Image (cartoon, rainbow, N blue to C red):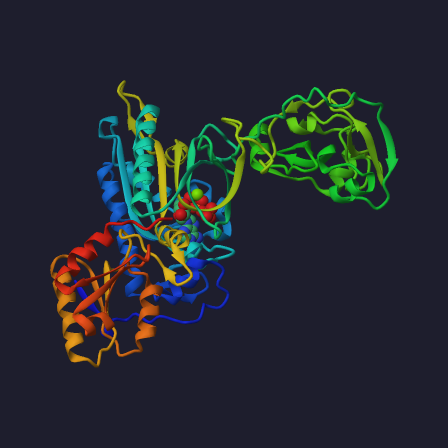
Length: 573
Ligand code: ATP
Ligand code: MG
């Protein structure tokens, strides 16, 4: 296919968009892929849509290969479905909703578990399962902070798949098939991803993995072990208890010290000349109807997802000032583990292991010295309830962990029977009884795959497409459009390449040669063919790999072979 740039709706920009926060945002706007239309909404222009369609084609191929069946669901959905599963309240303001002309509330679906489960009821017998259904469709989420161009928008394309099984083993197989398809999709899209163990909510038991593309534009943080490959998102990453230290000091008698005006860990650590790791922080929570005092080391932070999970709590929040005063007997800011009243004590292993710690004394402007958990306060529970830090070791192999930023491009989730029970999606089992279908759900952010590939593959001059996503395979630049012979030779080659099945953009615009070369670099098409000085001098063209910057000069008849050779060299990350 041959496209002439002189007639193509592709306008590059020299300036970065205002408020651009990420490389993909800048480059997708400057290279003419997308334009912002409103808050969190983007238009795909022809050049960008070509790339997006390539992402979708890869996804479709791999979903079909894994045995999933494509269907298409509406965006407008009845409010009753969302109320039936409780997500009307859980999702709250994220749901985009409106009233139709009859006054009925309609939800523009942010995801489709409810709709698909309702439809899946058509399968009545376990013999009709397993089935995996998927679609690529527009989702609506009234995100509080749309940002990073198309990485977080209010309207985006998602590939969402749902599996229905009649046994838990079956769910395991469906999950594994989707997981493997995801690995293939991301690898074909030229994207580096880490499949991360994810937190699956307070109820536990479920399995979930997030596919994370490492990038500075990522809003998620993941813990990754370069040694054994362990990867988990920060919410889920496990912390090992500290190794016993034979050199640690002997416990000393506890005593109190006045610390007027010293409230934060930093203040107390400076005032008493101790490291934050020597301090125990006490945070008071309300978990369902119980008051919980959580102890973590001064250099650690409470991970509320983990805390909710170990407490099996449905609702967890920091306690009110009045609750804190009641259980600690002191103003907010001085709670400590010793002498609390009416609070269940939960200690992180690292906090419990501190010898002669500094902690709040449950008295205004006072701290306690030489606090030793076990001797001075007995936790009811010692459990990993904190976030991992870059000082922690890998929970699998104990090598050093790195904490990196990443973009969530996909998510696979064993749902179990949450939706099938709520909506009554039952099948007859082998013994004639009926049971809820066992479900999994699997999402990919189509726009995010594109943006993440751009985040990972670019340089100071612009985009560096992997061939699989590139809107065109080759760009042929005619440096002097006024030269009829050169224009004809370039067009002839473009037609020849297009005839042989390549997707070719012919830059036949009447612009300065320098700006055309700049544009070719900016739009990042993998192979550049230049009709310029060498052609005038001796009928040769220059062929450049956009990604590796390898160059060769060949006679026109050899151009096709050279283009194909460079195309087959993938860009290095
Ligand atoms: P996030 O944590 O980033 O808000 P999520 O966990 O809510 O995402 P899922 O419900 O798992 O998202 O949706 C499946 C996929 O859809 C995500 O993995 C992501 O790639 C994509 N996605 C989610 N929200 C957005 C958005 N606002 N804009 C673009 N893509 C999105
Ligand atoms: Mg997710």
